[in-house]
Amino acid sequence: MNIALLIIIVVAIVLAIVGGLTEALSWLLWVALIVGVIALIAFLFRVISGNKKV
Image (cartoon, rainbow, N blue to C red; front, side, top):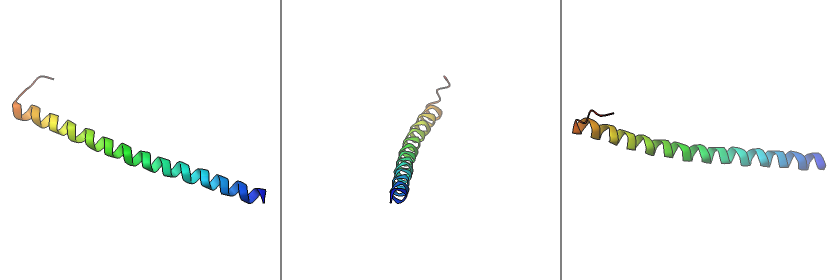
């Protein structure tokens, strides 16, 4: 009975970690997408305005 309980606990912990990582990965992908869009807009604004300063 203890071995079965230990296996269930280990599986539950692994699933919790994997679920948390996928949610964190999804959140980080959204953040990266938003930052990328902001960088693209800033780059296009510099190109269109003709500002050559770095």
